[in-house]
Image (cartoon, rainbow, N blue to C red; front, side, top):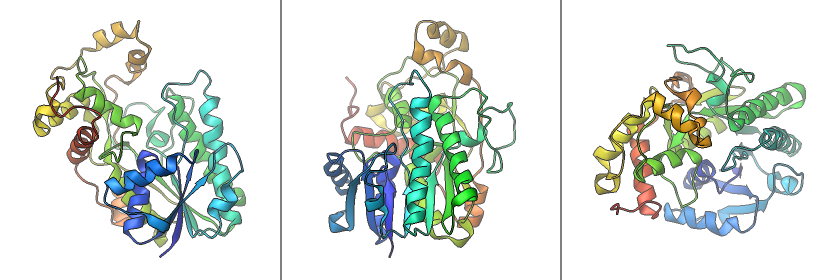
Length: 343
């Protein structure tokens, strides 16, 4: 079994990657921005049925500083670079996200190379593939790159530029280090605690009684399958130097996500909306609501991607998207984020 460093281990994806590494028998190290996060992470893993014990070690390290990285990566066979800054609200200056994401990713690769790590698996996003292009009916694949001059959020732009930077680093000074990139779509599935990814806020909002569903479309993948793809990409010989999209099926309209929750979650889904909001209403509310305003460019925009390469090369098999959505809702009820029976 190997020793693996997972950056950002207390996050939604990072915690599931650690869980599967431990279940597979590996020794795991992880970086957290604060030592206080270690107890939370260990409790999350226990809630999922894993007792990490001494096979999990935590190191305090931040993407914007060299401090702690040499110690964290020393003696590791592999690195899963999952961490990336993601604020609760859009920053006033995009560089607040772009600089730590890009420089942090290169920093992790540099320390991994210097420590003799075999391979880094970098968590990117489908946003690095299908933004900034004209609408198309064909599904996007790994050969495509998002146009950073196009319209996208600061977070997506930071991920595009960070992935570009790691490939450039590998070409320029990667040495014997290997790199594989995973590009997930919208990540759903079971949360391991009350701290979860922004994508889960969609499910939380629907269960809390959103006024309706804008005409938005989401590509979905289960976090458990994203973690599984990371583990497959970590050791498979043919994964070296490759990108792999993680997605389950076609992009789904938000109203269909709502219907699945209502049909499968019982009383907990009593407040989930049943109507689709007309585009004119979203635009009108957007005049007064900054959050709604961000949705306007996305109305009716369908972006499909294909995971055929991951399935063919790595033997990866994602769950149906409905399972990811339902698991999200069930776990939010389990941890009391939303009530089992709405008031």
